[in-house]
Image (cartoon, rainbow over all chains, first blue to last red; front, top):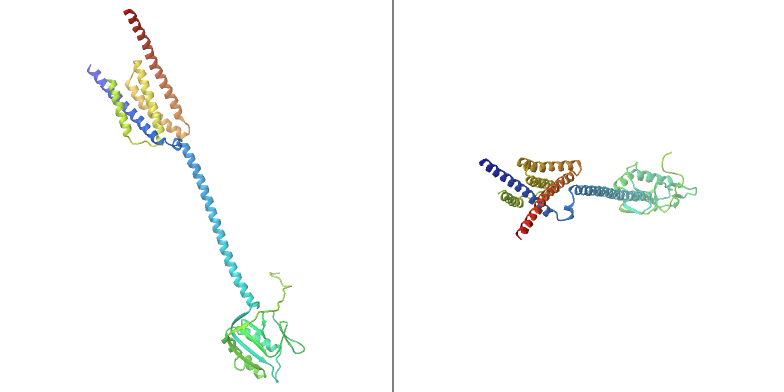
Length: 236
Length: 126
């Protein structure tokens, strides 16, 4: 009788424990579902959500990659634009320098002016001019003109049979005014070296020669233009 | 006596469940399967009681064992990418209906005989 009662109590306790567990779990589940089951996204199964997330992640990564690529190409373009700008600036500078050297523009700068005249004792010949120009070039003259005829790389000075002097297709006569742009000191000192200098040498021969240094000399641009016909760029 | 124990257990369980922390949505699927398994055990226990072959050990081990086994199966199914929990639900709910049918038949068998007895009694009194 006592044992039966004990058994009954044990059974009651176990069954109530089972009920507690069952209801506790059930109510927890009710609560969870009630609080999460609000929108469609939460209705979706976890696997579906996972695939959706993976899909979006893939898309995001793709977009990111594309963005990165585009950024890169934009950078490249910017770089080339910059490079082009630099190159064209350099080319501009080169062109300007070449123009100045070729005498395509009026130029000015410090330098010297030499005036040589025929005298009764001495008639100035073409080679006197050539000699002078060589001396000036040697002394570092950057630009030279004879009677406002610009001397550049293809210039020539020849003596015609009738005594006329031709400088780059233009006739020049005495007095010859030679302008040279360059370092004044170098130019004047190399010309006026004692005895061996151009001035002393030619004065001894009876030439009338005057040297003048100026801070600003204007040399006009070259008017004659020789076409390039035969020479070509490159190696053969 | 046993009814009081059941009622107290239910109320206590409800209170605990309401104040328990929320389960993450990911795990609520496992919990649902466990509940189905437990309910199946409960109905099986009631049916067994009516058939007078109720065994407390079988009931308790079935209650917890089925719940844990169904949770494990669901987990395995997710790992294998097979919805094994559907099979568990089919089995448990099918058994629940079976047990419900047993319970229903038991009371249906009881009810008409009572009614007839009552009828006989009333006829006799007339």
